[in-house]
Image 1: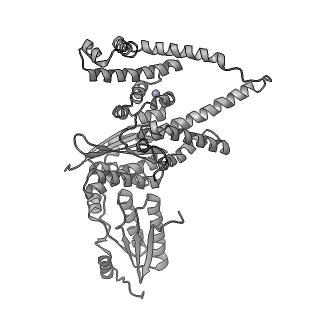
Image 2: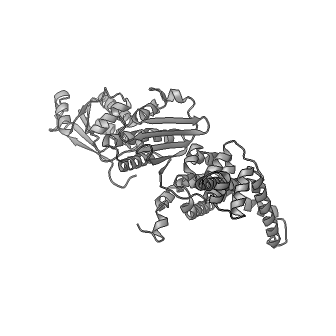
Image 3: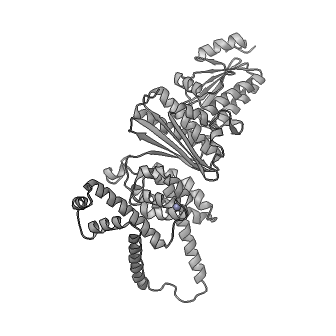
Length: 359
Length: 129
Ligand SMILES: [Zn+2]
């Protein structure tokens, strides 16, 4: 059980089992893009190696999106290499030119990108950041100047740095994000702000947006691992049992009475089954709540066809497959709070909460 | 799938089949349980079936419908079904789920289930007549 390595940093790391659990997903992504079996195997290996290497820096709930992003990148770099080889095949000369001259160009591009990113901050953000980072002014004296507190200035500086990283990457890419959601998502990731990541549904956006998927990789390294949510990737029937067992275990640790444990496990079973039945893949994230009192929040999220009429799906008797209901009305009755966000063609997110001692 | 611990067992006692679920089952395992049991009802010419669900962690809409389906199919093949071992928490949740369980005959435990079958189906664990 005690793997080699520092005990303190290994606590928040995903277990080998969690990494192993990613294999089917990674394999599917790679196999859908790379027909050759042996090559695909290599790429799956490489993806897992990268995910493992980065796992300590990735938010626990982000592991699956991160693996997806990495798998796509690994395949894309293979394509780039093949493309380069193909384009250069007819040349007879040695195709490896000295790399050195490029480096100057890179440094200059980098400087331009930083300058560009700075112009995208507000005057006040820029002034405060430069006063602190360049002139070395401390947060207390900055606070005095701005009529604020040192803590507020420090928080503002963190937000500004997060924005600067995002704007820098966009400037390097010489691109504007394709959707309104991109900047908020990238900011939440850059700031390592988990609550905000959840509010803007960052994990889902990464599954859908190629640009943010690509940019999230360098940004993700900034996030600090916090208290671990329990995450269960969902693809098959067996995962439904895994998800409900995990929810029961977490809820038991929170202090729910036995009847509530069964209610929670049953609600999880219902909503997780929908992922298996209707979507290709998804996940269930189980989170312990402390505020305003102890409770448990379960988010079941999928990338799938979505539910065209959520109100109707929440009515008893609604059925779409094999004469079986969606199980959503029942799940809603078992929990204290229940919300569905669904978009046709994109997917569904069910968020349900139960508080200790309610009713 | 073929190896590993058994997920359920189906034993014949006289004209009664006693089907015990040993652990939490996922949907496909539940479907396999249903198929195996229906198959055995025909082969063994059972008059009564007892399904012990005490080991099920969750009896959700799918499990309830599966149990109902088994009872209905068994009835069409001339056997009565009694579900035993539903835990109090599970019973409470089935009610909250709003599942229709009207057609399911239940009993507290195996012994009560056998008593019920003897009274209503004339089935017993004694030697088949
Ligand atoms: Zn985006």
